Length: 86
Image (cartoon, rainbow, N blue to C red; front, side, top):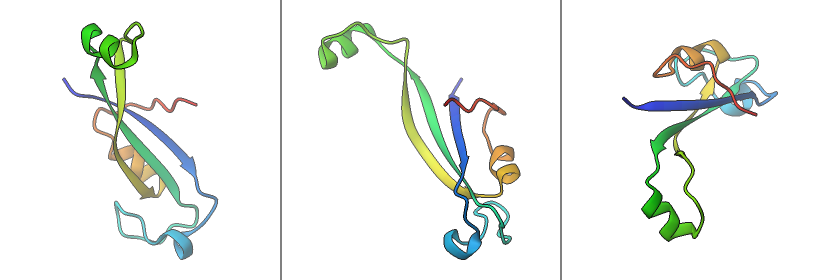
């Protein structure tokens, strides 16, 4: 099962600067930017070889980014996760 994590924040700008919502194609008064990370399991041997340290339980790898309405971006999340780590 693929797992994803999301970060979303306001740009404090409108479509005048960032263009239309990438999801619905409509004007956005406050554009949000969402970054999607794919969560991958880590293997101890590979991590130890690369970093020389004990392996974390998982990696977060940049998967995609998008701009638009907050609700549109959240609706497009693959696993419905509302997680937005700081």
